Amino acid sequence: MGASYLETILRKKVVFFTGKGGVGKSALASATALACKKKNKPVFLVSWNPFDTKARSLPFESLGIQHFVLESAQCFKEYALTILKFKSIVDLLVGNKIVNKFISAAPGLSEAVIAGKIWDLTTHATDALVLVDLPSSGHAYSFFSSPLGLRKLFKVGLVHREIERICAMYFSPETAIQLVTLPEELPTTETIELRKKLMGLGSFNFNPLVLNQCLPNFPGERLEPQSTQHRLSPEDLNLIRHFEFLNQQQQEAERELGSHHIPFLKIPKLTEPEWITTVESIAEHLRTL
Amino acid sequence: MTVPFSEKRIYLIGGPGGVGKTTLAASLAIRFSVQGYRTLVLTVDPAKRLAQTLGLTSFSTELRKVTLTDHPQAELHAYMLDGEHAFDRIIARFAKNEQQKQKILENRFYRTIVESLGGSHEYAAMEQILAFASDPQFDKIIVDTPPTQNAIDLFKAPQRLADFMDAPVISWFQKKGGFQLFQKGTQLAMKALQNILGSEFLEQLALFLTDLQGMQSGFRERHLAVMEVLRGNTTAFILVTQASEARFLESLEFQKALNQENIQISQLILNRLERYWPPLTSTQLPEAQRTWLHGLHEYFEELHALQEKWAKAFEAELGVPTVYIQRLSHPTTELHTLLDLGNQITGSL
Image (cartoon, rainbow over all chains, first blue to last red; front, top):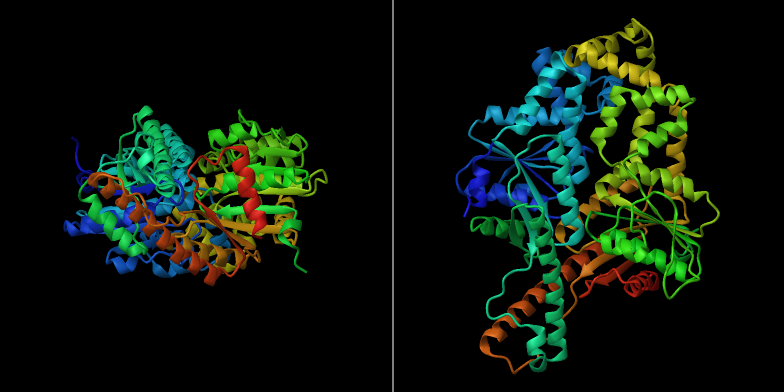
């Protein structure tokens, strides 16, 4: 038996959560933050939305974890200050409309400043763990690939130095990518694709993948519809067939991951009506993995 | 004047990833084609078995005729969106001449952008919506749009690029010593920017932007044309999602973002709802099996209850006609299942 889920996470300084949209990345990242906090580990939960929408819809704050939404404009401002030193010059810079348009259109720049900010967080709070809730597959890929692309473009200079720092963070043994997916065909194949593409970029460290929203283990003896058919009413038989179908989908997803030699952990689908209580239950469950 | 759902021409199927958009887009397309409409479905790479049902066994971006067994008279075409080369095609279309096209396609900065963006399904979708919207050979066009966040990007991306290229910053790049073109404040700001990013970065970007010269009006027109299609009253924007709190909050955000672009969600599909299971009736089971069955029943009952709760919230907040689709106990890849799903959608709208 290898290290538990939390042990693996706690050995890292930065963990990036990603996967297809709607697989429960934010819930898992939040639950992980909560579980680490219970182990007295200082944790920052950071989310990045490439569209810089101010409002983050999920109620992270009610969970009592430190949560930041990273905005590229704000991160650029902070970064500019470390170089220009004077707040008045920075204000002049970011207050300028033309410069702002320039910054938002320059390719890879927002990804680079966001990654730079995450790096800063890890250097300022050395014992803290930074959990990053990345956007779904496509944008997560560009988060990693853009700085690497810029690195190829600029061999010297300030941009080059900054990018080098970021790349060092990406591939550090203390950094990991946590992929999340659902036990269904499409999300699973897409996640396997994303993992392959990321591996093509460089030697990232992947934590065991999380297969989220699996069927729970029900206590008692499982009924096989074939052998017990005669003792079941038609409605009850339908219920069991429904379970059988979902279970079969899940097993196919597990086989697919297995055939690509991708280690994974399973988290059951919960029936909590609220997001907050779901996160709390996942956090409890993570301690047992 | 509002056009009834069944009389629209373009149907955009939007929503977060993994909620079944591709399947529902195919269902609606099959349904319309069986009904006698000449139908086109623009789709992303569908799951293997769905692709087999549609006869799209190998990936190709050509327009394909789909033959529906049992419905040989149905006129259905499918087109797979290719994100990989979407940008290159846009450049090729708007370049003034071959020389400009080659220069841009080979530009280091451009290649970096394109490669780091990965498969840009949103650009490909936009490009094809435009190409086919004016094509009279189709009565109905169903578009499987990218996941929620990217969909917003789909609406904003061309605007962002066009905005930037209209800015006077371009003229600054075109002339040496161009700082003087700006007012004093901008001159200082630009110098500060140069200090941060280094002159090499700015020079590279300048080269790239100079190469793009003359294309901005094309981009802008294209953007306006796409928006016109998206806002048109013969276009339906159908949000597909699931009944949970996270999906509910996300949908509200999405609706807000769309409204800012003057696009309205016209229909809502709550997909994969767990059905109501009547109380258990089997009495002949041994204790251990009964325990298991009760656990199973309770689990699905709870899922059903929580989805009911969020379905009500959706109804109250979004206030658009809603279709409820149950999670099935068999694959949704058979033709008759897809047709049945399509009927469910049109039947309740």
